[in-house]
Image (cartoon, rainbow over all chains, first blue to last red):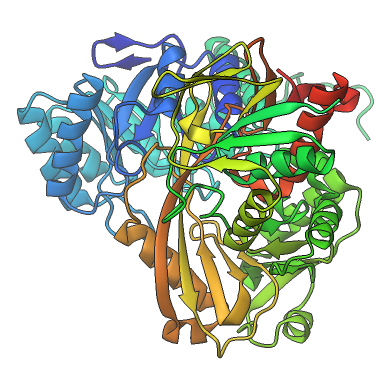
Amino acid sequence: MQIYDINLDTDIILGSSGYPSPKIFLNCIKILKCQMVTVSIRRLIKNEDNNFLNLIKKTKCRILPNTAGCLSAKEAIVTAEMAREMFETDLIKLEVMEDDLTLKPSKKYTIRAAEALIKKGFKVLPYTTDDINFAKSLKSLGCKVIMPWGSQIGSGRGLENPKKLLKIREEMPDLTLIIDAGIGRISHVCETFEIGYDGILLNTAISKAEYPEEFARALSLSMEAVKKSIKSGLIPKRNFATPSTTTIGIPFKK
Amino acid sequence: MKKNIGIVGCGIISLLISYKFFKLGHKVTIFEKEDLQGFANCSTTAGGMISPYSEQIHSDKKIFDLGFDSIHRWKKIISELEMKVYFKTKGSLILAEREHRSELESICTRTNRYTNSNFKIITSKRISALEPDIDCNDLIGLFFKEEGQIDCKQIINTLINFLSTHNCSINFKTEVKKIQNNSIILDNDEKIKFDHVIECTGSHTLNNNNIRAVRGEIIEVSAPEIKISRPIRLNHYRYPVYIIPRENGAYLIGATEIESEDFSPVSIRSAIELLNSSIAVSRRFSEARIISLSTNCRPAYSDNLPKIRIRKDYISANGLFRHGYLLSPLIADLVVNYCLKDKKDKNLNYIYN
């Protein structure tokens, strides 16, 4: 999947929090052949010699810093600038929340922060709702990647409004679209790719599974399966029954 | 044969190793870089829960295997010490809001499977019978009978006192520069030779790049009017908190877990979250008085399991992470057994490295 000028071999970005141990997290990265990991810089990293971070760096994964926990555009901009300095990357996963409880992305402040950050030369990956106008505004500002939620962060409820998400896909065929939140099950992953999205970003579904590595293995298989199925040329959905054998002259009809 | 043992660090694991060596008649010398006055390390800023069952919320099954008989090990140590230490074994509770029943059920199933037990979710009525001072109208819980808590500062001080009055020498304010071939080289280049040197320096480890530090924050409050006798964990998926009773109406409220080697004071956000959650357990905590807010960093290996590293120059016991009080009695025994009998516990191969 294409993240600005970077081409990732796998269509997955992993969040880094809440794993039973760093070792399990590193194993999941390996299992999924993941090449990009997002880290929250507001709480996690205060000094340069952070051993957890050093462990991630050893995997050669690209680090995608995020602004999780920011509630205003200003806060997000400052956090992004800190991240750029710390990680020497222009990439920023922009999260500006409406409030601390629902963690719903704030349309107003995300757009405001994205505009400022793009002017400062950042490559912004904004976290949005499934609101088409939200996505359109970000596209017109120059975002090449947009990451709508499937449902609320950590809720595991999957794609609650697939039709709205599909609309975004149809309106912006050239952008990289990634489902950022709400994925809890393998079926949600399949649905994401089936509606034409380019990738998934997930954390809780893996990190909080009882056996994260097992879930990672299942995830890897499912991504392979769903992509193969799409390549196979899926039949269109129809509003009427289409028998696979002809109905004329059935000899044993009762 | 009487052995001469040098120990670097003065946390719970080093003190228990020293104590075990002393009991077996060996000579122990401890080196600690901090002063006894204001002495604080991650062993003194810990919760001191001895809770092999409830740790299954977020730990490897191995933590249970290593810690399941910890309560009995502690009972033995405390009774031998013949000194007053606050140590309770009345069990502990995991509480959850009723609407989060499915999360508690999943903890219950998993704990039962890992520990081969048959725990069941208890109602608010039962919680109330165990701990009348908890506001438990909307709460359900799990009760683990065979758990308890120990006052960390008391046991650390007691062990320091005991050892220093029993011919063990504890050198505070003495920085060890290097350990070489079972000799300790001090900051002033003085070299002291031992039969064994044991390194227990936690996240301040001398030469162990595999250890990382995990920040934890804990708040001590005084609320003598609240009578809660067992450690309580509120299992909230966003604001988890534990409350651990201490002597004379004191409680510890903890603890955050932040992946950072950061010893700076408690943040406002952590304090608000922890204190806010405590009020969910009992509204009367709102009138508690804050005694202290402390931070420390716990040492952990990448799999969050403890390790005994056997090296030519020394042996290290480190990486006890959030399980210092749960696991130190066992780890101390394993270290002593290895030094004296050259014997490893075959069932615990993953501990040795």
